[in-house]
Image (spheres, rainbow, N blue to C red):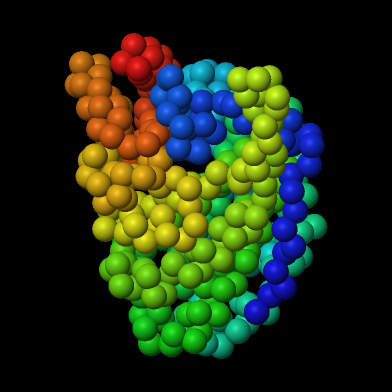
Length: 385
């Protein structure tokens, strides 16, 4: 439907190409090599749980902040400074590329993304898909600038770019906003497969370009986030969703860099590597193999399934990320510590493990707890190595 973007190698100044982040704990773990210390970062670490974030956000609208390079960069950096995490996650929102391509969408406080018009018929889909994703190549300039600003400050700490998976974007578009069961999206999927395929093709292009722009600007890894895929059966995911997710991932799968590694004879060896890609979904324990199969290097696991079981379902050959239960962040420290130990122990069965939450940081979380978790994970995993 749309012209494919030609593959390019990352330029020499990119943090992966220059070696700045290529040997970091996070990137090594994402590549399947277990580092001496388990890396840790938190989904939604940049945001509502931090008082400095809330102070910065006074009098601003979410999407305006996302499109302000200085503010987006500062918010991304705040948790890295405070917690000492092993990665920054770019502060943005999955609907940003929808906004930039011309969709009427706003983020309503306490509710989430709300669309001006729901896309529920073939005619609606045709009108939506008449918006050309190629305009994002210029419209995403504020995102690229924000990433570049952030990377310049992070130094050897890698930045993770992220984007919403095509199904999650399509679900918002069809429902007109958040939904508990995504009934209208699932109905369109089966009632008009042709319209659904066109919608998914379009969302894949939009979100894929968003992700690519972040990597080209300096992000060292990419995460595709499927908030609503857990509403699907395995069969529906494989038939109606996975191809579009693979299409979205293809926008970064072709981005490579040369890693120069000294061997025992001090003769540098060149290895060509791709930018690591993580795929995470909520409530997707039954879909793990399919989610890996779209072309991801790493699979994120939510809190509903133990990591050792997730590892078994993935065949024991896939690096995993997760899966501390966000609810336990407010529990007494001995309870949380026992949970952290259990997650780390189960994660040891996988080729590599990045500790994260099984979803995002709740806004009421005490930031000091997150800082304490980072210190504990680093110390405990180093002692157990």
